[in-house]
Amino acid sequence: MKAYEIVLCAFFAALMAVGANVSPFLTIGGVPVTLQLMFAILAGGLLGSRLGSLSMAAYLFIGLAGAPVFAQFKGGPASIFSPTFGFILSFILVAYATGKILGHSRKKTAYLYAGAAAILLNYVIGTNYMYAAFKWWAEAPSDFSYAMAWSWMAIYFPLDLGITVVSLAVIPKIRSALNQRKVYPVRD
Image (cartoon, rainbow, N blue to C red; front, side, top):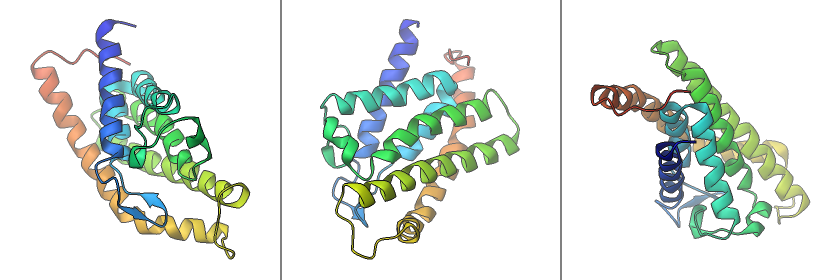
């Protein structure tokens, strides 16, 4: 890896830490409200699939090493047992898929597919992990079911859809600005 690629990965890992804690005490149904999905999409769309997913993996490992970078300023290996840890795992694939689908495409349909893939990966991985965590090791309500886990996530969907649309809308503008200044070094 080149030095600027390492810096870009570190930058997006830091943005994820900030995005995880923009609203440190706002939770709905036990899931904190964050801007992490936005930064995962931006990482993939701006850095490409390889560097975008690498930056999200760096964020994951920084948090598992004990730095309080996860939502609500949490971190450490015990985070694996948090019901929301699946969402953190999903960000690696969200960045990868966004980067792969967008590539260097200027087609508007690519942005639609990237957004759909981002939300789908985030929700499927995160919600299934949350369901498994509540069933196996976390305290769940006595009547907790798979349908209930998904109904909890329905509360977040409008927010995540809006975040996804905004994120995808700014990617071409940021790419264009960087290309005009000839500082867009990433080639996936």
